[in-house]
Image (cartoon, rainbow, N blue to C red):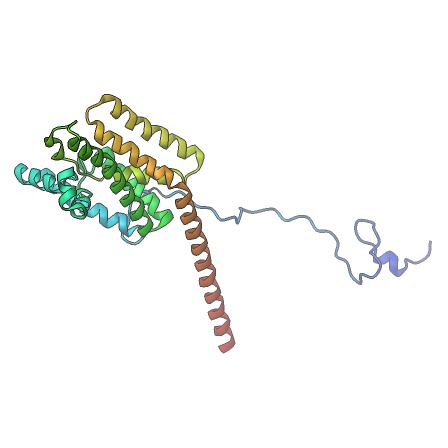
Length: 272
């Protein structure tokens, strides 16, 4: 056998000669062991279920007001509490005289206190919705459900009194609380969740409302709850569009912040 040629020396460890036109070739190396995935993950934090003054300011301060009114309702003189509730009632008589005032005032109370089902639902639903839509849009969903459900239940009462089907005493009743707004927010939030969360929430909440209606203890208010839930469900196309816009805006803001940071680092290096 003769001495190895230059081509023989350049044969790789695999026994294959290098390709023509490629001056140098590295031998294949073993694939490095894969470490933990660098893919972004979003850990679930239980405290994000509750409002904070910086993350969800609308829900936080609104909940603070509701907490204060709940303490008043629990500890103040019963005659004073009854007078406040009566003055905040969105019955037909008050809606005719001071519609804006009573619509706002009635949304400052929660029937049963902050630990009632609607009090807890208020915290959870509005917090989750505000984290996805922002404070102004969450307030809009709440207000729309509160106002529409109130008008859709009280206007028929007024018309029935005018037609002589109901007595005039029906114009004066206690109708106050955050429940209509909460129902609309629950319905709107369901449209932003994954199906495995959306449908159990809707079935559970809607089933409870239907059960109350069947019990026939306060049918007008119970119809208002169902109407408020329907308002929230009807807003799915709108809230989904709002949610996409907010996500895009947040991503754009993060990219801009990262770009500014990189630019600042480069300028610092240039100075050094």
